[in-house]
Image 1: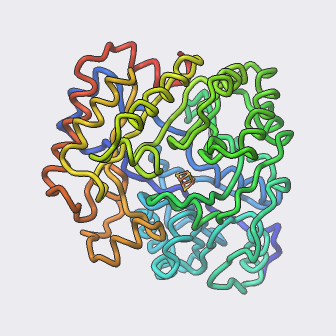
Image 2: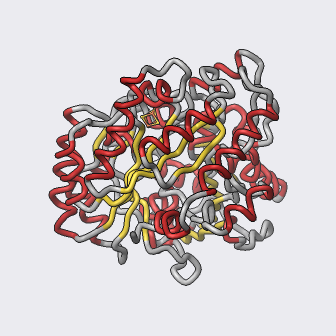
Amino acid sequence: MIKQVKDLKILCIYPHFRKFLEGHTELDKHLKKYLVGNYTMPPSLALPIIAALTPEEIELKLIDDNIKEKIDYDEKADMVAISCFTPQAQRAYEIADEFRKRNTTVVLGGIHPSTAPNEALLHADAICVGEVEPVWNQILEDCASGNLKKIYKPDKTYDLASMPIPKRDIFKQDIYKWNAHLVLTNRGCSVRCGGCPIPEKEGTRVRLRPIDNIVEDIRGMPYKEFYFTDDTIMLPGKKYKKFILNLMERTRELDVSIFVASTMMMISEPEFYKKLHKGGVSSMYTIFGFDRISSKLLSPDCTPQEWQQGIDLVRMIEDAGIHFFASFGIGFDYQDERVFDTILKFTEDSGIDLAEFYIITPFPGTPLGIQMEKENRILHRNYNYWNHGNIVFKPKNFTEQELMDGFYHLWKSFYSDKEEEETLRSFTLKV
Ligand code: SF4
């Protein structure tokens, strides 16, 4: 039936995903004491961005499956829009299939459908590949006129200056208990780390969001704490350095606390980190394993000089007043069973007091995913377990049991001698 766009009713669904320590009962008792792994992040920014792009007159309802909001498959809607990344894909497909059985139109988007489009198309009337902003209004128009295409893919990357302020009030404040939110600073990345889908989904050209827009976004929220979602701004290039320092000049006026993400490919200048701290950066979540610096640190052929450089960088950041939160990856082909002791020794030598440990996951479309598929090493495609807490591929230099034992060993050993306050303080931004 042909409708006017303004008369559309859309259900926007955020599928449940298994959190990465979920089901590891062996760790439950041990970690409970420290509340490690109990922290939660706000849902994807894609949802409030879609809400902001949708004309006011359209009825748009968000259902977050993660907080057990009921999905009524018989509810009448012109379109069900589902955004998912890989750990949500299984559940997204189940939900999509149920709606489609009832002849409700389903559109899938997000990282997973963008990197596994042929698979996603088996469960949807249409998919959005890549960024949603340039095509969302077209999807709405085509849905209203009954002419939905199979694939919506922008022909050029989106100019972040046009990005609306995400409409975060789509999240019901009485249900969500965060006192922090995600803020987008840029899109795209040219580095292509083995396990990261960002270059595939957002392109390899880095686009920076205008600083005025970021500041306006932050000012518009009732919080004092924020997560910058994109680690690219910490890369050691002049362009990024200038951008983040200019941004810090503005955020320091706002008296906020910021959690940034990075790889170990970072600037090695104490002054730089002091400026970040003044700008409000309180924590730095740093992923180890994929980039060339941290992969050296975790490999058996790391030289004493490289080891020391890694330690110096951690100390430089901590000395600037920024809490270093390390996230160590295990299961790489360049590692063997020695990696578990190497990681623990690095945390000890560098004084890291907050860490998590993850098993690498070969997400579709990433260099790691492509390699594992080519070498026929994927064990299964139950995406509920593609969440960094389970082994879903055949490791090269470990048995699966050795890798899982090593995962438990790391969590238990690292936290065995930590003071409760040391760990607890770090899972919120309030230090
Ligand atoms: S992990 Fe970060 S630096 Fe590496 S490809 Fe992804 S966005 Fe780029």
